[in-house]
Image 1 (cartoon, rainbow, N blue to C red):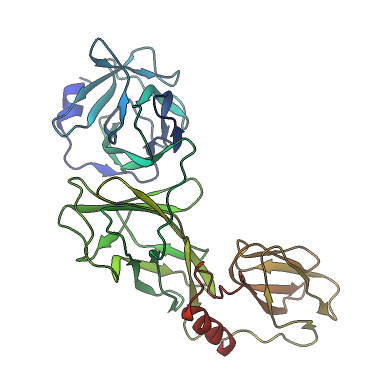
Image 2: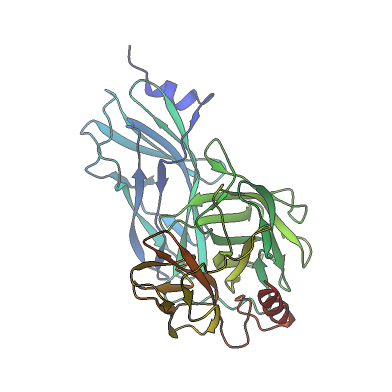
Length: 409
């Protein structure tokens, strides 16, 4: 006998955690009073016949209804026997269930599966978050998978969040040895009092965030309220979005110090310096006011590492250069006819096949030339915004320290 849908609904113990498959909504904008069509996407390696999930909308947004029922439609990824139903839970979330009575499978491995309309009330403003949680997907043979929670950002069309003034969400510079696992803290320095923070963390090649059962492990410090939770998801850009929130809108305590703790793992071939970036940082107050905090970055240096010395028989025309975004610099490998040029962090500066360096944004990168015989040489490129030496978009005494450390290195 095939597994019944009732068993799918009720038997949730011993689920397989399936991090690579995702059920999610892409970020979008909406105007006050507008009705907008929204898609729920399914990216899947496994083949599923049924999916259950809980959709939570923020204040000011509702799902369109007809005769008191929510209107959810399935795309052509469904089998003709698939149906979708929904119900409001006591938590305020909307549970949706996609199922097939004769256990047919959902087609394809990516793209929209569910379509529905979201209505923004006339007073909708700012940037809010829609969450999808408790996502369970079932295969034909009855195997059930716990997919990771997901969230999307819904922004008022034309909205520009107010600046967070001097508030910062950042990681301090640190060193790490190849193959080492190191505990790292994300700091919050704040004048405003926040209840929630959303940010995107981008790690360079060679560094990863520790995981358990396919989920990233982020922990909150004692600055959280007991009702605060932290969740994370991998975005298509490769960044990890983290969301710190409180269901009953409690505030984060204190005005400085570590808020998030996690482990970073350096692979065995890691060599620095590299840059970790935190961007798209939005922090919300109790009254719903949201602040766009400045992007931040930190430098991760290889512990005990020393910059390589350009070997004989060639040398580079420069060993270290400071550049501003938009500047170009021609680096020449004297005595070399055929070589390959690479940048250790191409988000900071790129280099073409002739050694022409183009600065993109604040940070540090090593430009390496490798000859056909395997000899290497390098030069350091430090890209800065005038006065902002450490690339944190704030001109302060820490910029002097950053320059001093750079010159010492």
